[in-house]
Length: 517
Image 1 (cartoon, rainbow, N blue to C red):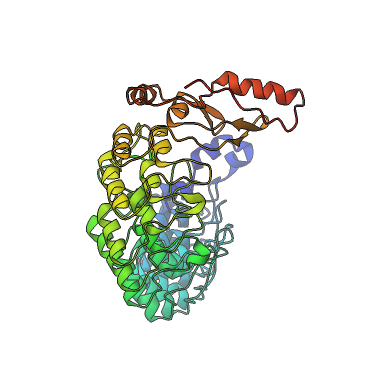
Image 2 (cartoon, helix red, strand yellow):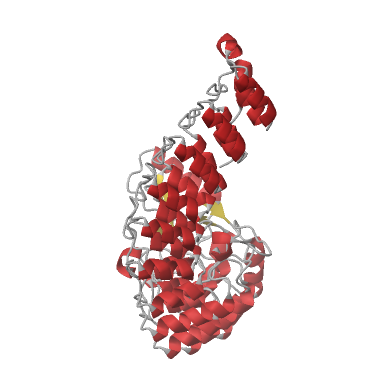
């Protein structure tokens, strides 16, 4: 907590405070801000008020605590400075001592009557601030002086132990637990200290919390368990540790909607995410588990502990960017869609059903054919091709269609994967399959009719997500292969439907005109 956060803008506030502020004697506080202890002592000796505050409420004792000037703080206390004075943000000098992790300053202020139970308006207690300061001795002293180790923020419901778990400070966590912190305390969303520790990847913190009574499979309201949180954040070593402590390998999949194995098998393309040489924190796992060796070790460990290799996800895997990924899929479909042949083989060896379709009829080959050739960063087309070949060799039908009549060829064309198109052809796929006639939501008119389309028809013009999409380069490529144009739609096609809808053509089922063969 910086002094510019807690004592913010004293000079600016002074300039606009008017005559009342101009009349305030802030000399002692101003001198303390300048770290001029000699001037402070002279002013106090001359009778200046040691309690006087600057326009934002900061007193000389606030500044002494901020600068960790223990000698000055003692002199100010002797001059009757108020140890419980709060600035306009509710910050007392003790908060600043806690921020600095200064045990000596904490002792001085507590000795002067400072309240160890002080809290800011949002609910952050001085004990939580001491957790951020990182000194376990200060934490112990505050608890000894009456600080409540189980007090929680008003907004997020987090307590000091959760903060310690997030900071991965085991010594501070021990001090809190010894001081009476409840291991099973939860936030409004059901998060516990163990779940926060799992997000940050600290095995030592997890070991302490488990030894202190935390349950290895405790879960948040959204079904997040420690092993799922560790996996999603890319902490393979912690996830394996939790498995060894008895964590269920599938987590709370019925609530979470996906299992640790789903995520461990996944890799994502995301054109919105920044590519950095060494991303840190949660950013490093945006595209899937960042450590290849750890990823494979975790997949093996999950399978060895009995993870359901054919479990179906019911919710999308969390990610950044547009679109839901891998909803209604088995881990095998996820691995294939991630272009990860090595993981596919591990899953097959443990009984993965390669032919099991996902929600809506999506197959593993379809999943590998989906993406965006223009923005694909993490999953090269060559990897997708190898995954497709293994899936086909494992029995997946290259001509399987989903509920809307889409086949892998449609997806490969729509997303611009020319090499995949050629591989699918070599494996017997039809170049001209046609999707089902259907309706699509339009944000202006309700629904629009979409005629059945061939791959060429799709890339020549289709309605998706409220806009017309085209791929001229892929269209030209498909024509060289002899593809047929079926169901091509232009903007005029949908403008006509829009005009018809305005005229009250309720229940209109007329099809857009095909562009020819």
